Length: 129
Image 1 (tube, rainbow, N blue to C red):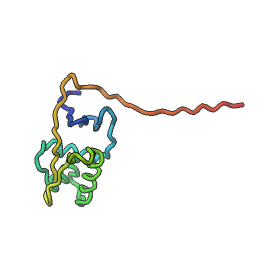
Image 2 (image 1 turned 90 degrees about the vertical axis):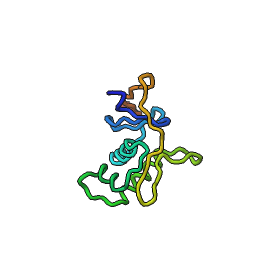
Image 3 (image 1 turned 135 degrees about the horizontal axis):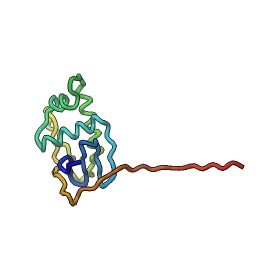
Image 4 (image 1 turned 120 degrees about the horizontal axis):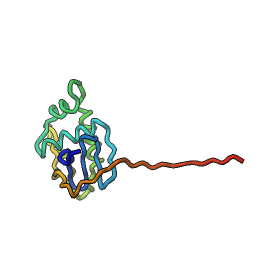
């Protein structure tokens, strides 16, 4: 995996190739189309992405209602919550679209860690009498 494939903003790391968003080393679960929505917004680097453009890039060759996009943006805002005192990462441009306003950067080699997989496993042992 190339470092250039990774993107970071604040305590988040986005790995498009692995379809993985991590915050402080902990994976943030996102539905595939929600992840895709975030990726499109971030790749446009702080520029306005119209609703039509977002729907075409996230759902190519498929007709979807605007309410699907609104739902995905809402889910992203909750997943990327910064707290009441900080503005959200995703800005709404009334009647036009959305803009990702976080400072996105590519990590340096020193910052790069490999996250393999983590899982919590419980084992139940039953003994026969």
